[in-house]
Amino acid sequence: MKFRKSEILFFALRNTKLRIGVFIVALFAFLAIFGPYFAKYEPQDFAGPGYNPPSGEYWLGTTTFGRDVFSQFVYGLRSTFLVGFVGGSIATFIGLFVGFLSGYKGGLADELLMMFTNIVLVIPTMALLIILAAYLKYRGVFLESVFIGFTAWPWTARAVRSQTLSLKTREFVNLARITGMKPLKIIVVEILPNMLSYVFMVFILQFGGAILTAATLDFIGLGPTQGISLGLMMQQAVLWNAIQLGMWWWAVPPGIAITAIVGAMYFMNTGLDEVFNPKLREM
Amino acid sequence: MGKYLKRKIIIYLLTFFFAVTIDWVIPRFMPGDPIRTLLSRAAMRTEAMDLLYNYYNKVFSLDLPLWKQYVNFWVSLFKGDLGTSVYLFPSPVFEVIKRAVPYDILLLVPAILLSWIAGNKFGAFAARKKRLDNTILPIWYVITATPYMWLGILLAWVFGVVLGIFPISGAYSFSMSPSLSWEFIWDYLKHWILPFGSLFIVQLGGWAIGMRNMIIYELESEYSRYMEAMGAPAKLIRKYAFRNAVLPQITGLALQLGVIVAGALATEVVFSYPGIGYLLLQGILNGDYFLIQGCFLFIILGVLIANFFIDIIYVIVDPRVRRGMSGETA
Image 1 (tube, each protein chain N blue to C red):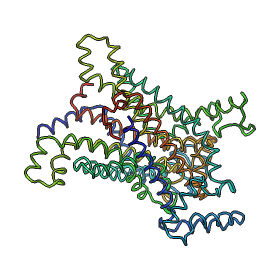
Image 2: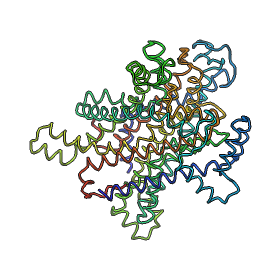
Image 3: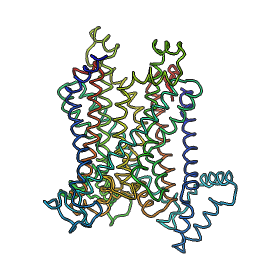
Image 4: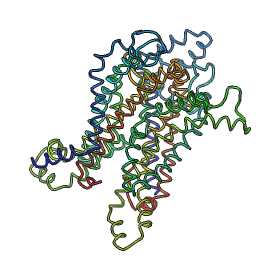
């Protein structure tokens, strides 16, 4: 076992895709954590004259109303990571729970759960979120993440279910069942550890997915009513004609951050796939 | 085949039922009493007041027992009555949305189909060549991680503002009115190309990655190895691999629809494109809840219909399902 762990670590450290991905995510995480301490203004403060391109004083320029784009950017990054983490965790957890239960129990429970999963799967997540968010007067970033988590789980549930189905018939699971282990314990002790690498990859994908969903939701006007996020920045930029006025410093940086973070997550995912799956390694 | 489709149809009907129920439940049981908010908002516009009040009385009729309210909601839904828009008063929501739908269809259908086809071709092509694969794969990943609206913003900025080639707002020039003249079609296409481009490009990355992974998987499989051992030409093997790899891509298309539609909504906002996404934004900004609810139902209906088409195509393409041989789960 010890050998296996160090072997995985060895391949993980050697994998370029994984290294690049981790580096980019870490870079933005660093900005999100420490950036606000460097920012000279609060995100909604009137920092100075409007329409200012990036300069020494305003690192990413100012908005039409003279707000400092850099401050908005680093605070927005915080929201982005919060949404990714909370939304991704909830979605992964529900997906695992439903998938394990449905795959392991089988029978009627499986039928019903999969029916429900398929229904939620067909309904566009965004539509569901729109109708939920539209009727809430005050929305915070945290609540938004919870909503996203509660709507993003179906594909995970289906994938976990099919993995569980194949693991369920293995001998070590049968053995555990014969010794009278409780189903929940079998799932946690016998099945879950065998899927841990997969679960980790699912979490990364859900993390990235939650960030993209939140950005879209913010952009169509259903983002947090208080605070700032990268999606909100883009929405305001578009609403106030930043594109037509050539204010690229307002509209472009938030998107760069989202693309870089989510892209890096996908990269990490592919890298991890190669680390965990020896067949793919030499490619 | 019949069994497969029947199962799917049941799921879709249940989904529709579920969606309508959500549409009914949320305004009624959400904390903060949205209906009262609606009424107080309506009171600000006297001419809207009467009509809205009547509508509320009819649809919400809060003195009736809950189940009756629910039945009434369905009845008015089947009559095509989705309420009156506050934002575009006094147009009925149904009419407002009906006017927007063609723009959505003309934008989404070509973008989805073309990117799916092109993505599959590129993905299968790149998967065979290791050098090409290694250089192009990172690009696919970056593309597929791009938020639709941001690519829209970039395209609008580069092609609309910096280069000034394409218009970046609306579906046609203000000076024009929709007609079937060449002039109008040309004008429409010029407005159409950038939103189409942002939808097309982002999706392309996802399909290409999916196809690449599937092709590699299929080329490693037993039947490919067997054919290779038998000395079959590489072209033939690849043809079979492609055929098998396309099936999960069709399923993937059904699964991705919701995401693509969300992307289209955001893209329309960027370009002020008069589809459902733009309506939705206006509905949200103006607190027009009937419009929001109507958009919600239309989006779901559209996705369900599209799903159904994809299922039929799947049945046609996959002989196992067609002959009822595999219990391909719904």
